[in-house]
Image: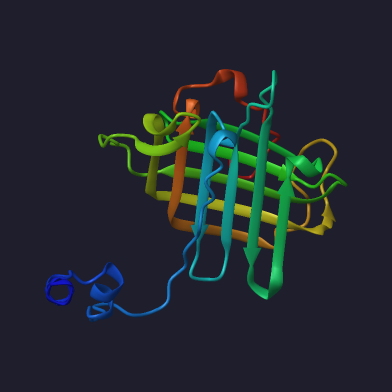
Length: 218
C-alpha cells in the first residue's frame, strides 16, 4: 500500500550531508584566517598572479593582477593591498591610476613589485620567493570560457617567503624612483605565503616584465 511504501522509504532514507555533519565532533577548534574567491567566468584573465600573506604581528598583504581580454586589447590590471597594526591601510589599483610595476618568473618562482599612489604619495615594495621548487602535481583546475579546465590551469604554493616595505600616504615618493628617505611604516618578513601563477603567466613572459625602480629589496 502507499502507507507501507512511505514507511519503508522513511526507514531506509540516508541522512543528508548536513545531518551527517551535525553528528561529527570537532577534532580541532580555534580561529583562522580565510578568503573567499569569486568565479569570474568568461571574465577570468588569460594569465594572472595571486599573492596572499599574513604575519603573526598583524601585517597582511594581498596582490592580484592579470591580463584581461577586453575586446581587441589585453590590459594588465593589478590590485595591491597592505594592512598593518594601528589601522595602517594601503590600497593601490591600476584602475584608479595607481602605478604598479611587476617583474615575475614562474620558472624561478619569484615576483618583484613596486606600487605607488596616483598622486605621488605612499609606496609598497614587495619581494616574494617560493621555497617549494618542485611542483610535480597536475595543474590546479580553474574557470575558463569553456568551463573548469586544468590546461593551462595554475601552479600554486603555500611555502613562499615575502618581504614587504610600505610607506603611508603622508610620505611623498621620489620623482627619480628611489625609495622615500623616510623610514617605512612597515618592514616585515612573511612566511608560508601563498603564491600562484595562472594561465599563460606560467610561461616566461618577457613582454610583460616591467622595468622596476630601485628598491632596498633588490
